[in-house]
Image 1 (cartoon, rainbow, N blue to C red):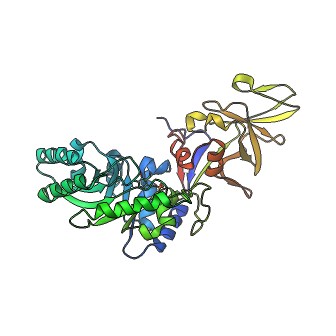
Image 2 (image 1 turned 90 degrees about the vertical axis):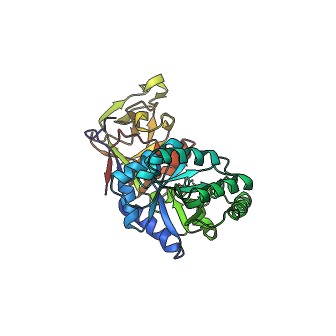
Image 3 (image 1 turned 30 degrees about the horizontal axis):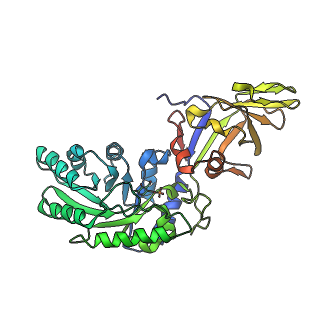
Length: 373
Ligand code: PLP
């Protein structure tokens, strides 16, 4: 992928905001609880390596990723902290993980047996593993006591191959006001953990929402994700957070073309927008190929602190806005962030495009350069 370094369109990531969000949360943890920073999906689109560095500086003691490749990226960048892959890695990659001191997640006895075969084929390396428990997320993990007990027995019998480093679950509704399902999952977690002969080094259940709103369940490690980036995991669902989260990401560009249209003149594919009189229209050089969604037609951006409507369809690499008056080419445009006291948040963009801010951060493509401040 070519990075558009010469185009005036940039994602700016405020690492001080990330350090603030991490250290505020760590200050709330009891002294026995560690924070692993979740930096999967390239740090939710913010850049895994710089984000991991900022989190470590602010006190995070480990990292969570989704893919073994993402763990290897951190090792290549010389991070020595524990790294846990949260998803299921193919068992025949166990030796690669062990060789790089990466901890893997599993949720079946068969996976352990296959991983054992791979480790045996590679000079019996020892792999750190975390046991996933499916307490109601319905995604990965043991659901039944018997299956879990058999796996625990296998781990004991193969202690030369496996170090049981952790046990965890993931909540489906920690970001919701109704806590009924959350508490049912927590209860099931405790029932399943009781099957294990001893508690592993890390017992962890908390994503951002759990740690922010149900800290009593934290175990002794939290997997802190979206709140690192200054985003409320509940969207607008639970606005009260224990400290002000500072959004780290802003997206800015410049006007590359400005023209006057007259009544009835059309804008963009499908000619869906017509000027209702004399109007100044500005063109901005990014589009859905950058992750600025086509359905954002009718939303707005900030030009000189003023909200300007997106008119006509968003194209692959450009879109148009209606300006309040003639504005010079090169004027700064803020798509996400603040300008002169007015803010467009990721949540605003998410609301308009009927999705969640998690998704919007992740789909800002690599064509947009990331700048760190
Ligand atoms: N733990 C697991 C297993 C996850 O899948 C995720 C993210 O999807 C997280 C923790 C972090 O969640 P959040 O970003 O909501 O804090």
